[in-house]
Length: 213
Image 1 (cartoon, helix red, strand yellow):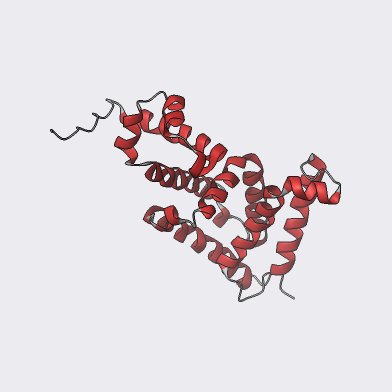
Image 2 (cartoon, helix red, strand yellow):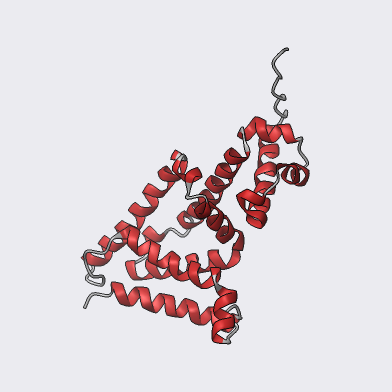
């Protein structure tokens, strides 16, 4: 029996690949990796299902590509802030504000992270692309901290990775558990005023921790 040939790539492959990634992102965010269906992704993308396998090999390969594209998007958006051109205090304030706004405006980001963690980040562990893009990001935060120490406004000895995890966690936990927290405390924590208060609290908390005594 002759081997089954892979489908020929589209004449203009990038738009097709981009449509598949966008459709997969929506499907994975809605249903998680386990509940996502390749048929639905193909239909949403307007692509032959075999083309998904041509570009991404498997459903797991497609999920890894979605995670890579998702992280690339947030890291590129952070680069556009040009934090290296700001004084250290303002740079950290802008990073906190951006992180909060990004999590707030991209709920699919939280859903994808939840799914990735459910599968013990196996897809991220096999991605050299994600590791490469995070090294300069950590270096940027480290530089901001060092500039703050030299300027006499930040305490010394702060770990850049731990700091960013804390900033992200302050946004992630609040928004990822918003329904339960709102029910428990009897407050609409997604209301505009509550979100503004949360950002102010996050900013004061982080900058207060960094402030040199």
